[in-house]
Length: 227
Image 1 (cartoon, rainbow, N blue to C red):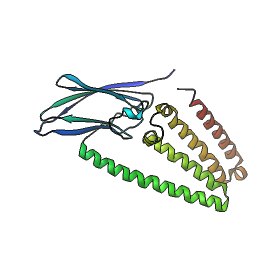
Image 2: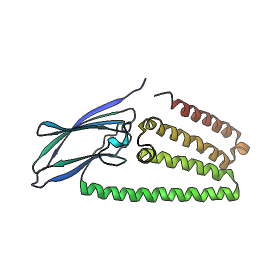
Image 3: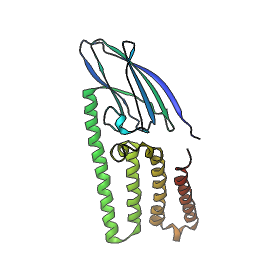
Image 4: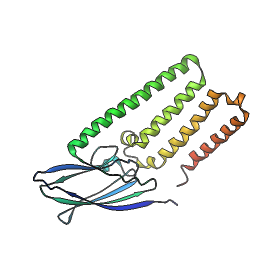
């Protein structure tokens, strides 16, 4: 058994100018399972497609980690878009509206920001991994493993993992986020135990940490068999 949430909505886009417009509608939440789009022009269906986190990446009209709907408007033209969104997870239905030029400017800024963030994280991971090889303190290895997992969790949350690693296997998205989230919590425990030396100094906390590790193992297993 699985539980789905579904929402329908209508958006009317109007060009009141005498010039042709190229525009974009963007859903900035990349974890929506299915988005069905019906485009109507002059009262007739002019385009229809289905995309989403559980469809192949090739179903997207724009190669983007977000859901992007490009459309054209002739002078003084009106179009209506009917959206049906279906998802097992959160239904974050925020929509942003851009001209194509403004959209591509934002894409450039976002890519630069993501490059800086992930570059800084990778430098930190390499530095701590080198410290582990030199000092042989396990706490550095636990630290690297936790942040390496968290890095891939973030790639999944912003849709980049699907775009670049498994664009033709959307089934992985059904399990990936919860798996990586539970694994990151699991990996944070040996780091905390080693850093705080709880086995020697805090017997009760040590027992509590071991119980937490068991809970996260259960969550990891349930992720593959439960909705």
